[in-house]
Image 1 (cartoon, rainbow, N blue to C red):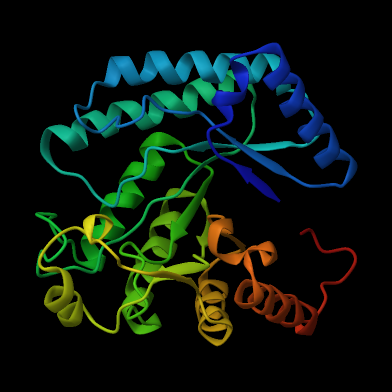
Image 2: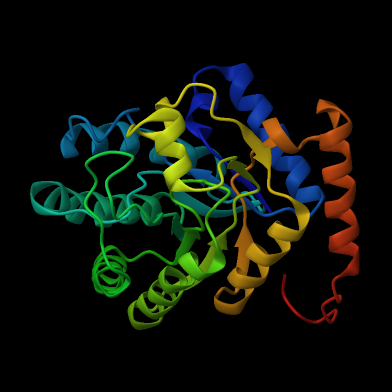
Length: 285
C-alpha cells in the first residue's frame, strides 16, 4: 500500500499529472494499493471556513476523480483534516465538513474514504491549552461522527504527542475506544503506527528542558526511528484491535541512505517482517 499525501499538488501542471499517472501505473503493475488525499487549504483550522474548505477540496476531488476514478491502483480517499475531538462551534463545522467531503469523494470515485484521527494524553496542558477527553468521551464522539460522516475506514494514529515515553498502557484505552466506535458506526478500524518519535524520557523532563510549550516549538527536541523492540510492541497493540496497519512515512528518519543507524534500523525491520507468519494464499492483504 502507498498512502500519498498532498496529491493535489501534482495537479498543477501537465508534467506533474504525467508523473503522478506514471506512479499510479507502476503501483498497478506492482499490485500496490494507493490512497490519495483530498488536499486542504493549509492551516484550515485557523480560521475554520467550511465553505472555503469545501471549495478548495471539492476542486481537488473532482480533478482527481476525472484523472483516476477508474485507475486500478486507486484504492481509497484520505481526508487530511485531522482532529482528536472538537467542541462548540468548531465541532459544528466538522459536522458539516466531514460528511460533505465524503459525499464529494464518493461522487468523484466510489471508493472507501479514510480519516486518521489522533488522541492526546496531556491531561496537564503542558503542550498547550488543549481540552483533554477521557476515552469513553472519545468513543461516543467518534461513533457518532463516523456514522454521520460515512467514513469507511478510520486509521487511528497511535501517539498524539509522538513521545518516546508513551507506553502501550497509555495507548490501549484509546484503541479500545476507537475499536468500539468503529464497530457501532459500521466502519473498518486500522492502526496508523508511527515509526519515529521525539526522544524524551518523561513529560516532567520535557518541562524541565523546554518549559510548558507545544512540542513542535521545543528547540532541539530530537527525533529518532522508533527502536525495533518498541516498534514491535506498538504493532502488536494495533494488531489486537485493527484489521490493517499503515504508517505515516517518517522516511526522513528511517530510510537506509541516511547512514549506518538508519541502515541498521531498516535491516532490523526487514528481519522482523521476515520473521512473521505468512498469510494463506487465499487471504486478502
